[in-house]
Amino acid sequence: TFGEKVKTLRKTKDMSQTQLAQVVGVSLRTVGGWEKEGRYPKQHELYQKLADTLGCDVSYLMTEEESFITEATEQYGSRGAKQAQQILEQAAAMFAGGELSDEDKTAFMDEIQMLYLDSKRRAKKFTPKKYLNEK
Image (cartoon, rainbow, N blue to C red; front, side):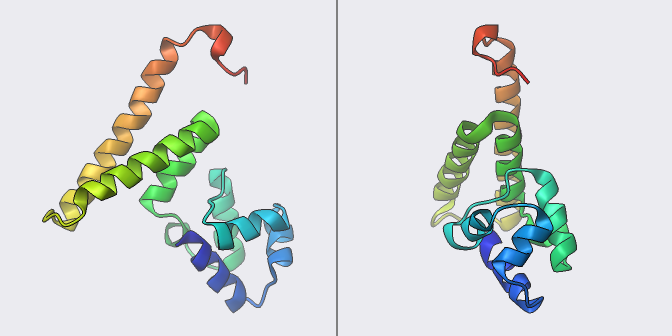
């Protein structure tokens, strides 16, 4: 998982959680959340900072699913992240015991993710202005 990757790389670099938090610009609690609670960075830029600090490629840290959850979080907040996570879990359950190839599973998951983000963008057009967050 993301947290296991961060923890392993951090230990390889002989860094404490506190040191990593300071270098990346987050709290110690945030690093602990990644490593122990299965949380993910909320901003896409943090993945690059982590990769630079830990000496790895961003793609190693960020899977397609994590990228999807991060994008949903950035655009639609915690509710979007929860919905994205639910979509991934439900789609994964559909494959349990199935006989789809990995290539077909990936194509399906990519399409589901695109459909979710597209539907959220379309729905936003019809949301009354008083319910939209001002940015």
